[in-house]
Length: 127
Ligand SMILES: [Zn+2]
Image 1: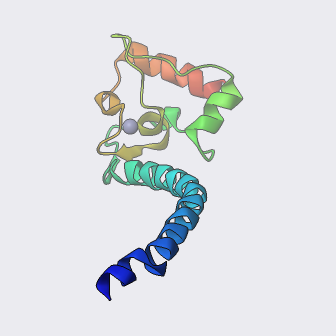
Image 2: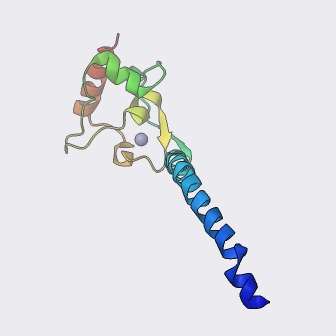
Image 3: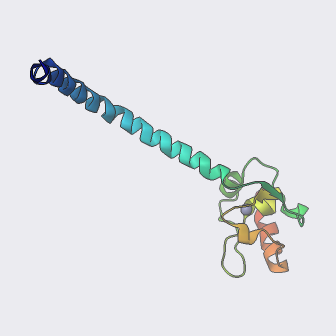
């Protein structure tokens, strides 16, 4: 009885199910990948941590528009850099607050006079 059962229709229907499944998996696999990518990006944004206020916010540097990306587009120029060549955190200096794990966290500090002037000039290009 047992031999008959194993050699019979069951393995065949299993094969059929496996083949059908693997076709289905190709489609859903792609979707899952892009979904995972989106979830990853969302998680990365979250991992930037809590908002931190800039206690030395210079009102002359404030950008009242929506995003710093918009500011860069409107000025048509890349933002100024620190004296050591590192990028300034535009969000910190023009919005007055950023995230604690920002990738330009090194810039979450008071600007030197020279840097502050460059930043002021840059923001004023938008006006
Ligand atoms: Zn920042």
